[in-house]
Length: 441
Image (cartoon, rainbow, N blue to C red):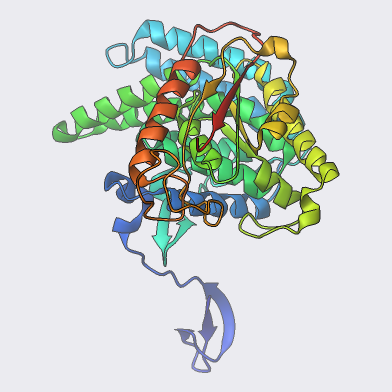
């Protein structure tokens, strides 16, 4: 901030020494090629940057003001109606049958979600957010994502559930094919906020992301109508793409709970991270990890070591009780019509059995076994030989050599995709429980 002062001669001066009559903001110009949309175009958004992005959004949401939820919830119906009217007015751009389906599905989703959204509003989760949180409004400054250009002209448009604010970013990443980055953003955001109620709110993500995509399609079509001839075709194509994305996102996916177990250093976390973005609906599965949960319950960071007493049986029981509670909250909210898939990762076959709290009647397919060596498993394998091929000398401290790792994860992913592939939707279906087991033998 720089003061505007009135000097003794009556003149106004920036940063003077007279009486302050006003303050102005000194802005710093940033490199416009470092906005995240530009970086996405250059395939420069990696998982580390996605992690930082989620942390930045979570920190912003923790300090923005709380608003009354009812006006925003009421406005959602008007957003759906405005989009529908715009799409029907452009039948050459938006298929009328798909327009009707999107409108019906969106209104049905909103009807089912109203009690959840009202409860979220009562809990202070409707806030004055960014309002326009796409990749083009995030810049990379000194290696850190910085949000800018938030909506200021309309408090109502800027208002929303914090997950609705996040949904614009997730939709933008999904639209660009950055599914792994989108999944990291979602899971890191949930890990940062550690609000149990946010696990309930993921049921609203398909609706939120679809609505964001539909609004984007509407706005882009309006720009196409006034664009110059060279730019019109590109704008129309973009509007169609956003519309198709909105239609896909609103459709619910069958629920499934994936349990991954195995000994330490066999790649459970890496397998979970690889599978999670591939499980519908976008942006993929919620990943619940026993090691992360155990450290959080001890007030430790993910990269900190725990003392031996943290692994006592009673502590382990609390960890898995929390995992069951979290998975249950995601599943219970799945009955609203938009079901979320979950992956739970834990160490040891005994713990896998203890973790399987869902009734066995829910298991309707065979267990899928995979082998995968995690090169981060330093100190866990004493032998210098690869436990996969039994011959090759390992280049690093992991259980498997590089070739065995590639073959093993490919085999595990092929089997996982076979068991976790898309199936016909069944309203109200009980989530399936699947186990994947990682091993080094």
